[in-house]
Amino acid sequence: MGIKGLTKLLADNAPKAMKEHKFESYFGRKIAIDASMSIYQFLIVVGRVGTDTLTNEAGEVTSHLQGMFTRTIRLLEAGIKPVYIFDGQPPELKKQELAKRFSKRADATEDLSEAREIGNKEDIEKFSKRTVKVTKQHNEDCKRLLRLMGVPVIEAPSEAEAQCAALCKSGQVYAVASEDMDSLTFGAPRFLRHLMDPSSRKVPVMEFEISKILEELNLIMDQFIDLCILSGCDYCESIRGIGGQTALKLIRQHGSIENILENINKERYQIPENWPYEQARELFKNPLVFSEKEHPEIKWGAPDEEGLITFLVNENGFNIDRVTKAIEKIKTAKNKSSQGRLESFFKPVANTSTPIKRKETSESAKETAIKKAKAAGGKKKK
DNA sequence: ACTCTGCGTCAAGACGCT
DNA sequence: TGACGCAGAGT
DNA sequence: AGCGTCC
Image (cartoon, rainbow, N blue to C red; front, side, top):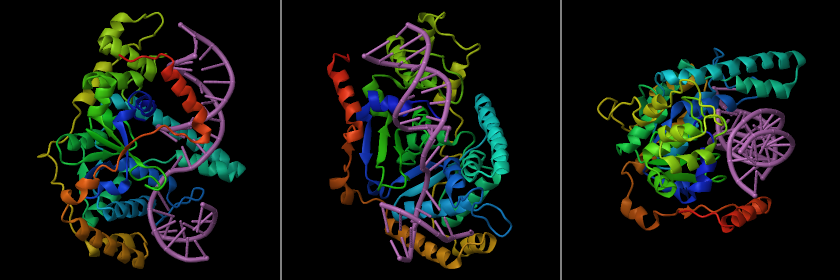
């Protein structure tokens, strides 16, 4: 789930910390990606018609392989060096959240069988998407695929997002690409959204720099973490009646959750019983991750052509011509970008970024006008 | 007037042929 | 699941 | 751009 409303909060309060970049500008960059997130999306959408998905002869789902394969090739062709991070054991505090998701899936399963009885095709598709779960097998399949492609894989001890952030902090990757905003809470210095959206064509890549966010919000990292906890995270409840805006105001005013708790009206705001905000804070601040020496070296190698044919064609029913062509693409892409990023080549045009602008389309013109009026109307920042 | 909440809704990949 | 729009209620 | 296909 990430952090509730953080995108909007940052768009409203730290717009300069977000920059639009071209997909192409990441040529030669090493990028960490949370694998489970991607797999989940693939399972939901790739080749799905009703409850049907892509499958091999044994009837096992192959949508995640198709999705992972083509997406990774797309990244490689763009000169991007992806490293995929897989989830380990979730922290204790997340169990509640996971239980919630589990029960939602159970509800969806009931809705699905009901829809099946009635025979409503749209409902069947809708509910079947909600029952999707990434299994151990899906993860293992994708690890095997990526290794065969010569793409590095890291198995995180706990949260993948936390490991991604750690790789970025230590300079092993340039940025973390995810749709999950808690990468920022984990302190990823540079964070990309929409890197793999139906592409650079529709939505530009949005790049966040944590240092700029802190600067613009006028907070230190510890305070930003507290802000995220108050806004609503996966690890604990938040305080009913306090959303992003109020949380930001309170943090600016009091500096920490402790001080806020001492100063707010507890009649008005019900503080959850035994609220484990300190543990949540610790999970963001010092998450369980592998250091550079504890995980395998991050290396991009040549694809194992035979292995790919065996796995994809023989075991999973992929079309051999497509796979062969795809392997050629991988080889070409790797040769092209094997020298790495030529800084001299890119420097003059490195900043293709432009500060984000508020949309001025006809639909949103009204909203923008209101916002401008608001800003002009005496909302002063210190 | 502003904010939070809760409701529904929608869509969520990538490719190539036409 | 999240993002967005809209209704409603609380401050 | 729209639409069917990938397995």
